[in-house]
Image (cartoon, rainbow, N blue to C red; front, side, top):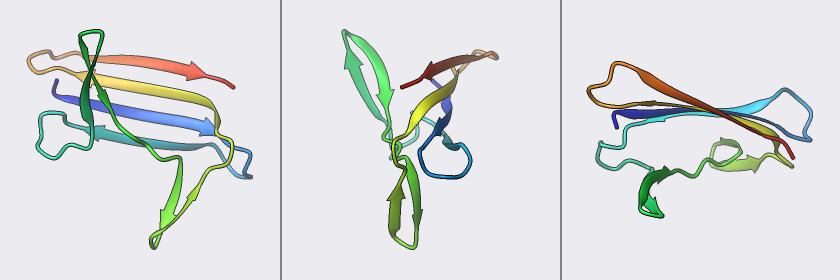
Length: 91
């Protein structure tokens, strides 16, 4: 796998606009902050994404996150095409 790009959007009970996180990681690079794991013999990557903001070492986590939408784009070495998956979860 060449890279994984994710875009996460969600709502909170705090006033303001929709919140989110976005990033790309490259599983083949050393010191990647994603963990390769296996479930029922199939490999997958897991990455912790805190929902909130941090400034000057002080973090404020978002209250009651809900209505999640995650878009994940994956690109494999030797394949010119990027695969995209969208998942929506409401609670």
